[in-house]
Image 1: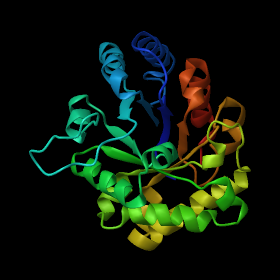
Image 2: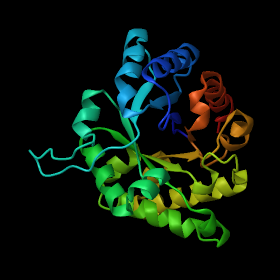
Image 3: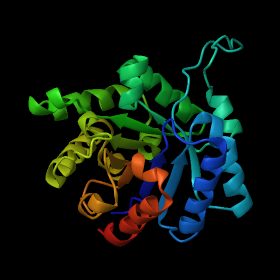
Length: 263
């Protein structure tokens, strides 16, 4: 397995300017330059990206920056999108990654699979790697429809992309019912869903791309269960929510990735 591990922190709508800088500094102190075989990414709220970037710039850190969403572009030259953040703005802030399709954005902002697909394409066109989220509700899970539902989300997100773009993209499986609840699917189930996602990529783009694309698990991933989830064959890391707001917890997960992802 030649895929580089990824541990990405999604801070969601948390922190203040001062606390975001302190947290970034603590994470930098814990993680910077100690884990060259892991891509460590932090995704602060839009308003704190610059402050976190300043910390990493001062430290000459190898921790990378991501955003939590992006606006789908309007026709060139038109910027009448009050309250939105464009891909050009993210590039100006030196974001290398961007989360798209998170269940909270789908649910609260009405983002459709088709809208997520447009954002994925837009990010790739501008050199930003998308972290494409997918995941099912508890009702879908109980009905046994997880694979079909998640596969539909990912198929739409990837359709029309080049094999090269898909290979560099990141997919994050986050069951909605596990996000922030402390409930986590059994490891065998997580691996099976991630294997199905990899199988879909193989069907659409071939084995080489399927072996290159990185698939993360998210949803109540924390130090206590990282040692069960990160070694799974089809899991290449984690998209971390609540545990990324504590530098020690986040570092513990990074350490688990270092120690356990030896396949």
